Length: 188
Ligand code: CO
Image (cartoon, rainbow, N blue to C red; front, side, top):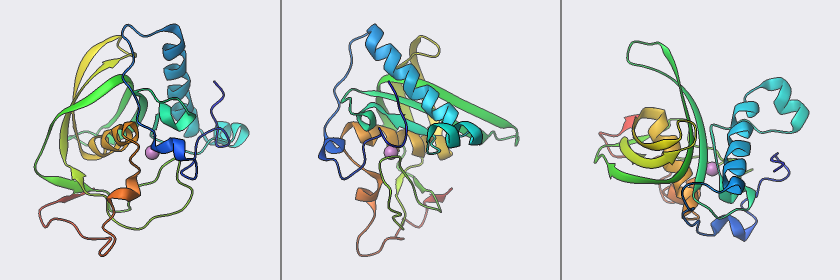
């Protein structure tokens, strides 16, 4: 599937609010091809030359509903540093991911969030769980995995899984007080 900034659904298309359904496992050839294309989009999107040439907007994740397919598929590539300060890249091609536990402690990105389906800038904090545990089938490792995510990765996964429910990041922004956050929330 051709995925670029023109083919990605934007939030003026009501279908972006459609609920996504689980896929059958093992993955069909069609679902597998889609998930690989989504992953490739995310990888290529942060390559300046490719992004320019192929009209890609930089992203750390994409969910299938954003290309018009209401299935629980998401691809994520997140670069972070580990506790020793070394760079670490988290890469996932997930089918049917679900959050099985969430910390009470909250976290938010200091710069707010963005989304391939949102062209406008929305100012405000999106308060999410600081740590989550996700179970999913992962096509990269070709097995069922459990992800213990914290920090930026936890935020990205929650953003992507929201897409399955038709939720966009700005839905979470407090309308009266966009920068409200619990006192003990972690700023990332
Ligand atoms: Co998004």
